[in-house]
Length: 312
Image 1 (spheres, one colour):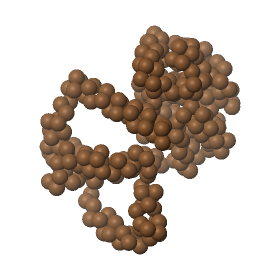
Image 2 (image 1 turned 135 degrees about the horizontal axis):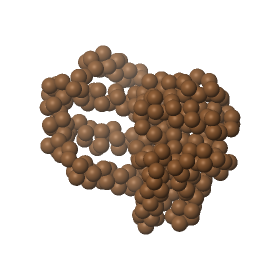
Image 3 (image 1 turned 45 degrees about the vertical axis):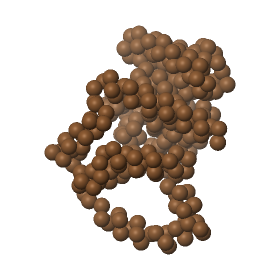
């Protein structure tokens, strides 16, 4: 019960590998492109050493000890040997994922848990070519998983309760914050909530009510300050003298009124979209250099927030 296989050595695959070795598990990384899994370990080494230097390395092992738990494979059968849990991280293309899991199933025992990192494909589609679907689920991380600990566990309609329990325990052990959906739904929970925020933010900008810069401040300097530590349900519960029921008595009618005023789903690709995109690109140009710098800044800020949350 100590070996985990990560399928795919891109950004998410590397992040999962770092999370799992941080929890003390041996991780076998597989990539079907020869040499890519080995390159991934080189990149992970650099990241783990930087994290150790910054005092942000997860787990109780040193970076050297964690690296010793990593191995790379170009052969799928070898990569799967001895694993009790498989985390797939290949391209977000349904057919690719279906074929990968079909191949995996022929090479592992019936009790090995098969988990997908998909962010938008429902389990019933991802695992449609798998014979034994009771051991299959989606474990959807948030990018970057090393700093943002949430992972959504989404069952296939046939997933066994013990598989959900085992995966929840595993994710908790390696320091993630797992949440369990009771059944599959398009977008899962996180992306559905995110889509609602995106849609109303987009509408407010498109209708000329607020700028791109200021709608981002509504979240980063307003709602996001609370939501970094407590969610919308607890926020409501604490925002009225007698809790959630009291909050809804006071504000429920107003919330309903606002919700009925929401417009249709915005057009994210029409003429109006171009204006929003241009406004965003004036703030942060979309060339690789500027975007990479902002991504690095994002990760540094998330690291700092993760450290603060850990201390509290």
